[in-house]
Length: 97
Image (cartoon, rainbow, N blue to C red; front, side):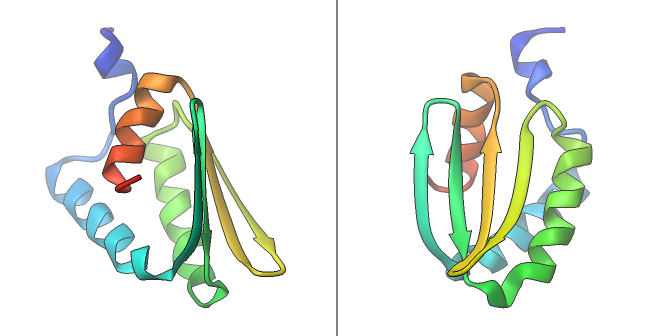
């Protein structure tokens, strides 16, 4: 398996496009973001918590090479994604970070 394949998404084209649209729908709820070499943390307004639970469940299946953590904090819902730097860089680009 090549390096790019080891960080690939398991969703097919249509499903991948739909998942990307779902994430874009949640982008306006991001209240804070922090990026590091091996990951990033996004804090969302709590109003979208249920949608994030569903999105992260899908990501855990299709992009299992990354660690997807979703927690509730006093000021919002926090998504933390960590993993190998090349894959995280691609995900961060997809999230516009």
